Length: 240
Ligand code: HEM
Image 1 (cartoon, rainbow, N blue to C red):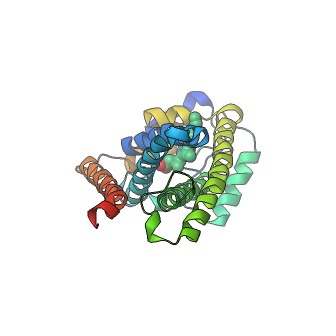
Image 2 (tube, rainbow, N blue to C red):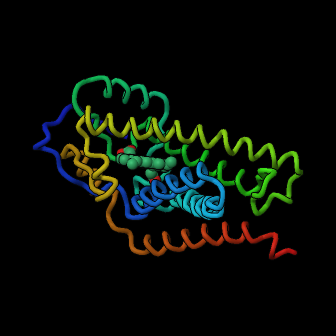
Image 3 (cartoon, protein in one colour):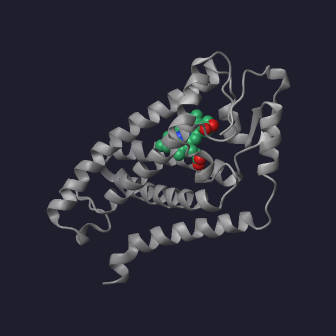
C-alpha cells in the first residue's frame, strides 16, 4: 500500500486501478442498496421487491468475495487488508496537507470494505430466514424455529440501520478524499483509472497488465454466485 509525499496535480498520471468487475460490482451495489433501503422502509407490497433486491445483493457480495481471490491486482484481498502500522502511517498522511495517494484501497478503507461486505452478507442471510409475524417470511424461514426466525427479523431491522450509518461514514470518507484531499477517487470508480504520482502510476500499470482469461473467470464466478443464491432461495420448493 505505498503512499507518496505531496505531488503537484500537473505531474499526476492516470493509471488503471479498478477492473471492470469491481466497478460494475460497486455501482450495482449502490443502486441495489438504495433500492433495498427504500423498499424496506416503504414496506407493504414493495416487500416482494425488497426480497428480490436482497437476493441480488447476496449474489453480488458472494461474487465480490470470490473476485477478491481471482480479480485484478487491486481487487484482491491481499492488496488492501493492511496491518496496524500501515494504518497508522496512513493516518499521519491523512492529517498532513495534500493528497494521500494510494493505488488501491487505503489501509483504513480496505477494512471498511471488508466490514461492509460481511455485514451486507449477514443482512441478506438473516433476511432469508426471517419472519415478520404478519405477512412476510424469508424463503428459508421454515429451517429455523419460529422464535429464531422472529429474532432474525429483529436483527435484520437493526443491522439495516447499522448499514445505513456505515454507508454514511463511507460516503463522508469519500467526500473528504475528494473535497479536502483533492483525490479523484469517485471518477476512478467510474473510469477505473486513478490519478497517481508517476512512480505509483508505473507500479499500477505493471500490476494491472491484462491477463488472458480473467474476464471469463469473472463471468464464471458471477454465474456461480447467482446459481448459489437461486438454489438457496428455491431450496424448499426443490426439496419438497
Ligand atoms: C453515491 C454513493 C457512493 C459513492 C460516491 C461511493 C464511492 C466509492 C469509492 C470512490 C470507492 C473506492 C474507494 C477507494 O478509492 O478506496 C468505493 C468503494 C466501495 N464502496 Fe462505495 N460509494 C457509494 C456508496 C456505496 C454504498 C451504498 C455501498 C454499500 C452499502 C458502498 C460500498 C462500497 C464497497 C464495498 C467498496 C469497495 C469496492 C470494491 O473493492 O469492490 N458504496 N465507493
